[in-house]
Image (tube, rainbow, N blue to C red; front, side, top):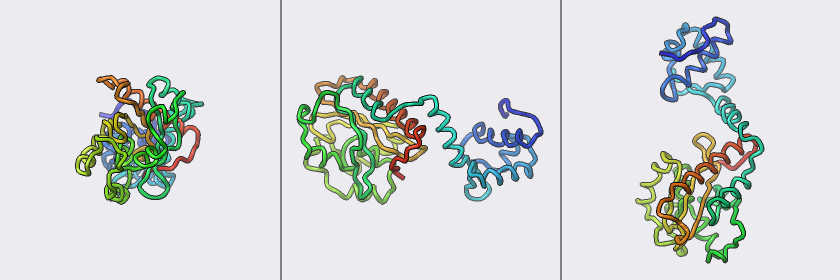
Length: 268
């Protein structure tokens, strides 16, 4: 049974009832008949409304006789949510995360060429890489490979299959830690990353360092990955708080990017 909704007969009210059906019906795609039954509107009326909304990109036609919300609807929803967080800035979000958790906080995006990730923003407090026993060579060898680390695996969970194959054809960087995964074990983690929304790395990128990574998303597209990297001596057995904080930062960056009208590089 449909939830409470407008029952009027004006065109605007009928359009609202059809659009509400997408939120009220289970699943992402719906047939004309299902929408008609749910809204208690004549199928011909529903067809005309859907056709007009497809033209306006509020609705998409998927295959034969199936419909789902379109890109304009998704963007409007994200912008409405982002309005709650007006004024948020990606770098400040990373700074706050680093202040709360310590260690290194990095934001990785997919490189414009090849199966590589690049650090496009970071917050390391009062530290420099030398203080953590890291060098520029460490950062730009293991650090740029999608083949290692929680952030690499998180990006791999969202990249096209062609890029995934390129990354997995590469050897594990010599600077990687003892927790670096072989291809089969790595691939086995990707579905879980998409379901849970985060990855945990145990000495994958560097010996003696653990990490938590979460994607900043636009729908099912990754804008980039928030990575918290900490030495083992500073990480408790229970990292639930770290996971929650990294997830929260990634979600805020998603909203801030949408609200700010930015054009971040996307991972298709």
